[in-house]
Image 1 (cartoon, helix red, strand yellow):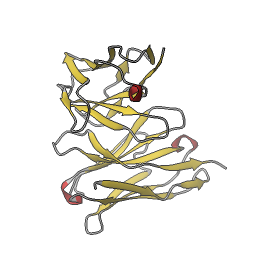
Image 2 (cartoon, chains in turn blue, brown):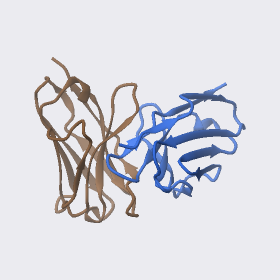
Image 3 (cartoon, one colour):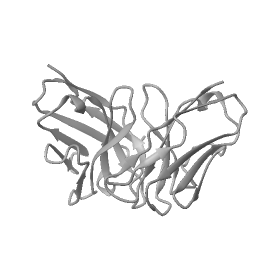
Image 4 (cartoon, helix red, strand yellow):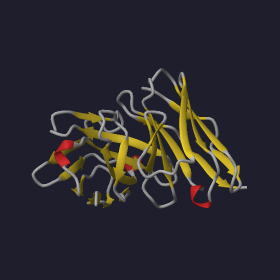
Length: 107
Length: 120
């Protein structure tokens, strides 16, 4: 199985900050990685797919990139509604696996 | 409006069975693969099972293989998950999710979830 790790379980930031969240796959997954945002008591929301494609309706302050087995989600200017938990997910092979999540909270 | 609505969750004893359903609307259901994803209380997301658009292909996490069965009825726009031999560790919110329009298994539409509690 492909293991997904996220470098931080939580990140403290302020409104307007640039925030970077990283995810690493245990083996190559091409660019078959998605990012989701989840708020408490809500379903996850797709932000990014195939590592860098922005899902329709998602603000352009969200972006994704890839370098080998390392993947990055960047929020260019953090907004109040962005405080949430972010998960990566590999879509390369079954079983599909998620990272453990990174919670972005208020500094 | 594209929508997924889960039902069937509840309290069940260890070793018991439960059947979850997901009603889809607002899109051509048969054209999309579907999945179940769960989240234990206070924990992260765990993919459980997936099924192709025509139902011919089914996929399972090792943790549920042999105990859970995914199925769909394209005439009724419904996705089901039959859960047998339930364990305490199956306690979670179960989400129905639609695979995106490309052939890659990421999920662009999610239901609100239904809570399954396995406890005596």
